[in-house]
Length: 82
Image 1: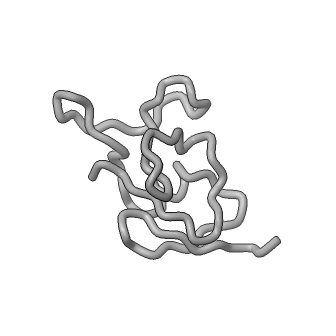
Image 2: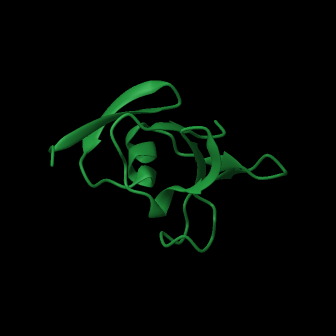
């Protein structure tokens, strides 16, 4: 297994350690808000175990993925609501 992988967060290239969670990659990309609530409030991971759904992002075009539950893969394209 490679030690690092390359992916993109909001169209910015990023290299992360292999085995990192998508939520970690988003934080490493300096994205503090993962999505916006219906009232426009910035939201970010809360529970870290997929229950709160605050960590939702779009991965490779598929919306509402729980980033705290998904391991990063080479070439992954991650989008937040920011």
